[in-house]
Length: 367
Ligand code: GLA
Image (cartoon, rainbow, N blue to C red; front, side, top):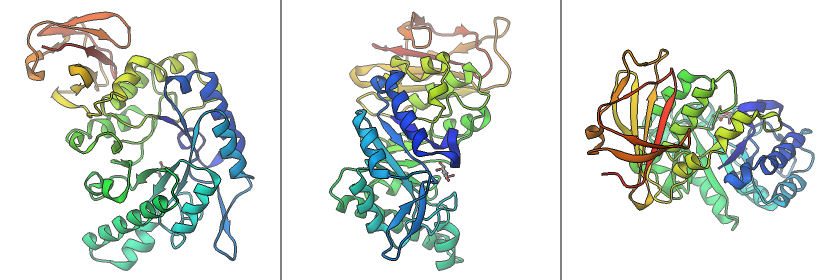
């Protein structure tokens, strides 16, 4: 869990913004709720000198001092690069300098690296194996293995985040490359359609996730764009069901109370961070209503009902929950994690749901 600069600042991020984000993570209580990484995304890079050493650009005058500052807040800090000659933003990549860069991140005190394919695809994969997709994928995997080894060789524990948008089933090979998380989709955007496409496409990947190695459906857009409160809640709930890395990406110094309430909902965070580490999946779908479950440590079950439709389901035609399809029999006592109130789910229960909203229930003793 943590915060990453990209989804709000994009290429505008500066040293000052990173410090402010670290301050706010502490001041808002997000750190206490579990968010403990501050990750700098793309656009910090400057030029390499004659020895190949990569310097920062003027937005980041002193990375070591910045890392020390973030650490002084009791937080960890992450950085960004890629295997290609250039990053997605057109800044210097790590191609041919993997060991040197890894050593530099370690010497600055970084704890996390997001490694983004981008120009590696046209500049290396497609040039080296123009008509051979399978060979291109082998080349890509080798590049990720290379950086994985370089990070390991630093002797510093550095979380390794693979970002190649889910090409060639990274869940099958990323753990062996040293990956702790791997993007399983293309980029998220702060709109419901994109969030829903990404989130609900994760069904079936649950068997690849577990403690220390996670599917990453991309960072959170909670609090960004024009997402409604229902959409923010549903997005956060879905990511929690997916055991997804929770990397907030909003404007922390100007966070609205209702957004803070979503991002710091301890009950929902507890689903995401559940010790069993078992990613949830689709129980069933009925039209545009999605019903997902996630098994929890201690035998509990989280049930999430999402209305993905642009229109609602109300008393005239509510959604009827079929518990048997979830392997449940009889009334299930639980807690509604968004109202905080006790709730009992009964078979065929009529549920009224606004557009893009969610009902998220934790059942401690499912039957
Ligand atoms: C890619 C990644 C994003 C972000 C940008 C930065 O699009 O998927 O998450 O890191 O590059 O340029």
